[in-house]
Image (cartoon, rainbow, N blue to C red; front, side):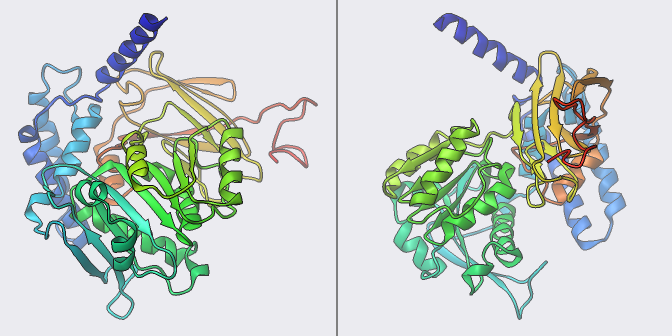
Length: 428
């Protein structure tokens, strides 16, 4: 049985490698393409020279075909690991100079913010920070009675964290009740966006942590943006009334919580996820060990999703905002061997599937089985889709998508013969 299990793992690994999860090119090979990507993002942000920059990206992508002559495809879009590395290199982190091991106060005045209403956050880089390496990130939401710098000094003063991770703490809105609303969400997500833009982040090891009042905020926010994080951490605070529906592929570590944390863990088990760890106290060495064992599940083969007004995406599955009725539920899985995506769902008319060769082989026809109705499609990779998603922060260097497919979900028959969604109680 052990040998059989090992064989299965090897076969699965071989299938993933064939689909482009393993690198095909060296960083040097990607230099011109990554620089073209960086120039395109700058042009797009400034609104100048966008067309010329877009042409340059296309030309450099095609030029990489010669370097991929011996690979399964000459299209760089067929290799997510190389494409992700090019995206990571486009930030040109070595060019950005920061003090190692120091706590830096940052004032941000763009996008949703201004000089009169700035976003302020603090960042601490590891003592041995090297911008050519990828570093894990702890994005920490402090309790209401701590300033960001104070929170770093009092709650994250550990050798493992200060030497091995980038630590960032946003200044949250003055009213705690606003922390889960637009202002609090923006403070956390814009801080993360700035950290990922300027520091050499490992996108597969970004952890959202909350302490005290921040625990319920971290859980609520990560449930809405689950695909962005490797895990969510709670310390010395209760979970709040957060639903467990968004945590299918998002592990959680709750230390020193109360009855709501216990109830949340029970619900996670009931839903079949089983990825919530309860701990009696906020022990930093144990938390560091947990983090090492839980990198992000960037391309999960299964998704169990209860969409709502706030929950519209789960990894590679997305719905239109406002399209889910009460009680909507979607289960989806991918079989890479047969190139098949199976979707069973109710309460939504359609879903969008985001695709990459880390999930399926886009050189082959794709079979989609939606509520028992089968169709075969040929999905085309799109450089424009990739660059647009990258610019708007919908993908990152560890999770790239190069195609999307809209899938209709035919109504399912109920036990009484009525189709869900057609009767008075349909889809509930």
